[in-house]
Amino acid sequence: MKKGESELTIASVSYGIVASPHPLAADAGLAVLEAGGSAIDAAVAAAFAHTVVTPSSCGIAGYAGTMIFYCAERNQVLAVDFNSRAPAAARENMFAVEQDADGRTRVPGQANSRGALSVDIPGTVSGLVLAQEKFGSLPLNAVLQPAIRAAREGFPVSSALANTVTGLLAAKVDDFPEIYRLYSIDGRPPREGEILRCPELADTLERIAEAGASAFYEGEIARRIVDTVQSHGGIVTLDDLAAYRAKVVQPIHTGYRDYEVFTPPLGAGGLTVLQALRVLEGFDVAGTQGGAKLLHLLTETAKAVFRERLTKYGDPEITGSLTEYELGEELIQKLRNEVAEGLKKPSKGRIIAPHPSGGTIHLVTADRHRNVVSLTLTHGEAFGSLLAVPGTGIVLPHGMSRFDPRPGWPNSVGPSKQPLHNMSPVLAMKNGHPALALGAAGGRTIVNSVYTVLTRVIDLGLSLPDALKEPRFHVETREPVWVEEGDEELAAALTRLGHEVEIKPSIGILQGIEFNLETGSAHGASDTRSPGKVAWR
Image 1 (cartoon, rainbow, N blue to C red):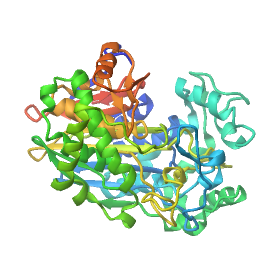
Image 2: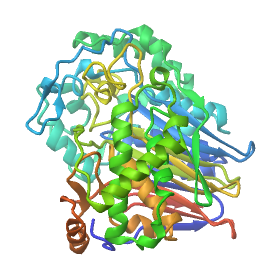
Image 3: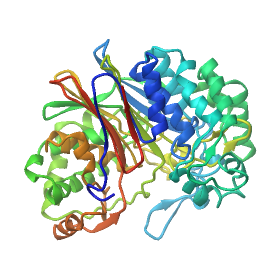
């Protein structure tokens, strides 16, 4: 997206807001607010609506999600972790590995990302239902009605969905005929604007609305999931599904300037966001005045924190939480020194990671009681495993792709293990009050996108909408640095500073809500890198 090409959707309100990357999902959340629901109710309603109207990005069997929220009644920030788990029969050497021409590890035939062996235990239904039943104010059945209605009556196909069905599912129809049947119309890919109906998914959502998460993880739906997976050579069992539980967890946090920034713990991506902020606190970010000097600093920071992420992080039940060490002064000072050296001469790095992938949504909500939710859901890559369960409308997850397929690494495959993922919803508090709720879609670009916007708001004093308009970057441990198109001088300036630059059409899709602590008003922003919406009342 070119800088300033189009204006963001902004609302200035003091009652309730939903910011979402799809208008129908934003409207679903707003309808629940208007019915007397809380920010949690609205977030869950919008999330379930997303599983219908953005099915390539997330689904009720999406492999994972995570949320951070402020509960005004308790004056407490909490998180819900609904990361997926590997089947109990998973083993660290279950996938063959080889290297591609760039030296990246790959699995032949995409066995860990497409098809039955890529399927793990999905967390989405458990996490959303847990959050709503524990912290919501409306009956679950009422909260799911917008999603059920969209699935039953149909919704206009977006250009993104039409393109994905045409470009991906049609090409894979011989291997995955059921998912093509679900998202085709009269045997062909849908056209933008056509109405797509999902009656089988509507039936499944109605069962969840009536019986809760057990309708998904036990009984007929669970049996159909297992039959489908095992008949195609997968290893998920009924016991795996029945044992799954999402969890309410304590968030991790760190101070940054005058703010306290909260995010869910590992295996989410937020620890890397916090570590980047800790590193940046040792530099004069405001003095860069934005532009190439800021991206030069952020690029070297990203390299330092991704070296930690890609070599040490994994399931916290195996590695430990790592929070105290990774945010501790000794390591942070070491990373600051690495960044300082990189500012003199950009480091080239040695670790080669897979290319970042998309297939994620982020949404934020706030209600009149000042409850605030920042929630991310994902399918990983588009449509997850591509394996659909006949008669249910369910597309199964490919959470096994989030593990390192090589044995012996912190994020290697293991029985009932949680994979490392990149979702990084954040909530920044100031003087004990919510000041900014934020999150992103975009694979591993999520991490860099989130702390980049935070620094532009906190250090440079930009409003959230203005911060979202600014160009973004992405790099991990080695260059090239990805930079968004539209600012040729920025790319040229980074090149002069010693970086290898690669231009990308866009990086990350963010949603956020910014709170004015003096007036009590709230401002929602939906990134125009996607046709989203801010709905309010």
